[in-house]
Length: 232
Image 1 (tube, one colour):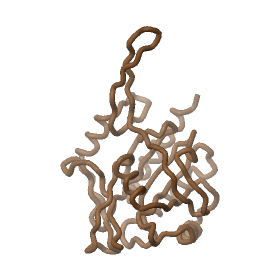
Image 2 (cartoon, one colour; image 1 turned 120 degrees about the vertical axis):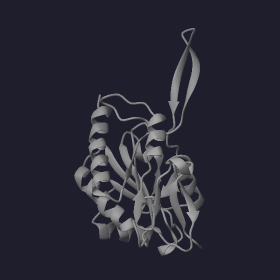
Image 3 (cartoon, one colour; image 1 turned 60 degrees about the vertical axis):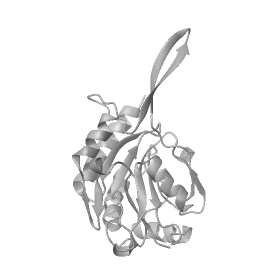
Image 4 (tube, one colour; image 1 turned 30 degrees about the vertical axis):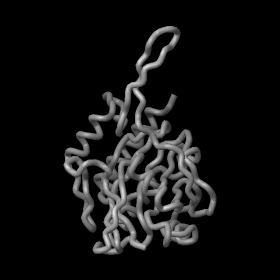
């Protein structure tokens, strides 16, 4: 079965694409995402779609803005237990999509995400969630061995597998990445190197180039900002 590639699920003029082993960011994506969010001097924007919802409160009509959020899901971790959106309740987290036999950008991504893991290791408010896009190969045992080889212990960084279509659907509809077959690419797949920062309300607060130090430095800076923002 051919693997698929993950690329941003936006129209091409405002997307960023990964070609074999490098990421090209186009300014249109940033403009689109930040245009769909809200920001202030001390808060990260909320990215993605939003809609105005009008309701009656104490007899008065009030309009609230409802932002795109990550819905519930159900996958299996490297430890063989069930992981849902509730597993990440009251935490900020970084999501990404990869596969263990990837010969191109995944090794770079995991080196960079390991930096995030080490920086925030032991922080109960932070988690990492890596979704395999090759669940036919990446079984629980394969993911467990992969995590061990990275030096990952405990439950702060979870590697999840599950139904392929549900993983791709979650990527496309919620994390703004999608899947597409490419049998001519190295390893049978070309995919996005994005790291996605999600807040405690399941809103996307940033998308970063996970293949570079600069992109991940920005991610870690924004994680610190988001943690400060979320404190009472």
